[in-house]
Length: 519
Image (cartoon, rainbow, N blue to C red):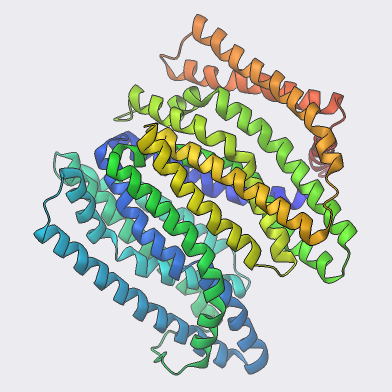
């Protein structure tokens, strides 16, 4: 489990780091002020439609149909199915783009807006065609994967980030003197990056025999089949993405700055959540599905328990470090250019409220996979929709009632994720009658002790470093983060070993075996 999750995590880490570098360049260029908030919010709408139409539900529905056509009817039928689905996607996404751009143009023409709102609408109109390229690119990547090609699609994602970074470095200086005009260089970068990522897949598919030609989708059975299969999945995806957009709308309504500040904090959370949480969940789905098919529910519960234990052990340390070193980490990674000390303070504030939900976020991914492995998609979907409504209510209360600023979105997300996890556990226990989690529960006091010692070392180390050295230079910023982090991590792992926490020993043994393998 650890070995397989580690290899997936390495690929995920590369992707997350490139995305983090992109955000570093973005925030150094424009800070976390009104312009960054307007750009982030404008970009979220084409992303919303991309995830609804191009990723997730569509690719999950299309790829099995694509493979089935190859097996049952041959390659010619497979490529025709691909062309029919791509034609339908171009038609639908093109219509959505024209509709949204038309509505936005009318709003700009007849509305009276604050400067940041007008800028957001102009950026939205400019960037929205990105959705077409991104949707097509997602299907082409799925086709590459279905044909056994994984490296080129992954490289395409890296190139996307490189192009978006280049738009800041190479293009923005030639777009005028004001940030409000230079920001359109980033919008151009988004459009170019989307097209390049899609086109980048074509040589591989061309060698496989793919040639695009228009297929009228109206009467194609494959299109109806894909639509029928994607509708159940799109409900959950739509609920999640629409919830994100609505919470961003609430934040943007109070201040565009909040959107950007929370987005940077969420980027930092994605590192531990994606690298270990999503990687472990990716491994567990086929593993648990195989056990469910064999009716081996004893091993099913044991594997689920072991996965949850590993995740809690690793992400508890990540939570401690992000919580105690939030400000130094944000300062080291982002404080340069127009990202000033105030931006560091606000992003750190959001991160402190977001971090307590890290373990719950990750556990939700694992327990949802357990339901999928059992063939139950509806239960986690219903729980997800309920918790998304709760998240929206929490956001309104913390944002407009308690006026927590960017912390409001972090706290709302943490509470709704915790609620989601608790409901999933309750529903899964009813489904399986028992989860056999007594062993994990017995570990919790030892885990809490190790986490407390790590937190004290990280917090105390930071205080000592600040008292004697401060953080005026890059070497001092590095020391402020990495010395307390290293001391806390070593103490946490050592205590895990001494307290006989199984995950600590298994993780240590896996690393030792991996290190000794070449010999």
